[in-house]
Image (tube, rainbow, N blue to C red):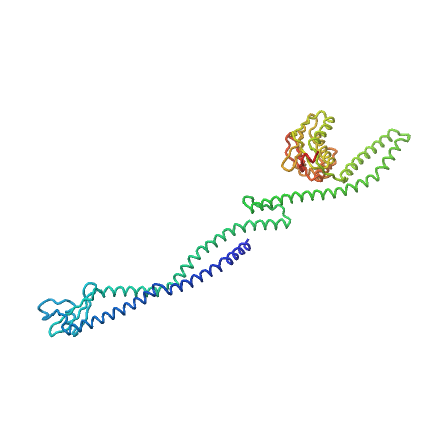
Length: 465
């Protein structure tokens, strides 16, 4: 899971970081070039020029006012005898300073140039209007302009714009990375679960399953995995069962061969002994009868093993399962008229893909077992119904049912719970069903006894005809 998420993150970084860095570099270059021609630099030049112009203007006006005052072209306001009247503060300060001459900016907004000159014990004040120019206002504008220039240099506008651009670019990029990590976790987690389950299956654990609550392709993959493991479990069980059957077949063939070699001479000798006259006729006949009975018992065993070991060729074709059920029930109903045989068939024929002889043998075996289990006055229910891609043939009896021990070993060969049984009937029946591509399973009986279901592949009616 970590490797998948790491690879997704690497791909995201490789596809987004280079374009983002190139974009930031280009934006920074454009900002630097544009700010070279910004209003701040123009303001710096204009403010310097304004200061120089205002200074030259102020200097020229001072010289002109001084010349006019010396030539008597400007009338002076005289301040004499300081004790006679109240002097203005700037005049008093000038008089006390001991200076001979001082220029002042006065008036509304600094629109008047004032020249103070010492004259005897008094002060002569000369005034000149500056033509509507307010030097105080010019000084304030100049001060603000210089402060703006100083602030722009201190703040480093290109760097500030760059930081802002980086922040604006990084926020959505980090948001995209967070979404990627979230979805990468959601994507990689089921992949990790699927990989872990596949490793378990590869190690032989076919019981591994995955949750099926997800949607989309991942959910479909998990459902497909669960179906695959279920089919693998069924296939393994069938293979194991067929392997056990193969071993029992070998044993059956060997046992049949050995028994047949000894049965024939025993029976012939005993029959000949019974046919010869002797003094103790009753004893001889009794002994002969005992031997013949044992021989018959051995012959039954040989026939059972021979039938179990036989491997006839399998010919699969479309067969009407309902017709086979009707035929078999008719034959057994004549042999057991005291039993209540019930047929539950659909109106449409139930066609299956099977070997006809094997299918008849399977149905006959299940019906005979049901007859033995139901007993006199008992009931047997036989049905055939489609279940998706298969047809289910079921046989139920009204007998006492099966114990847990019997149900656990029901299809094992040589294990029988019937008196005189060999334990091969259901084993042979299941093997025949498997050879037809189906199976036999134990189900809950509908009549209170046991119930068996034969599952075979369904086929279309046209194939049957």
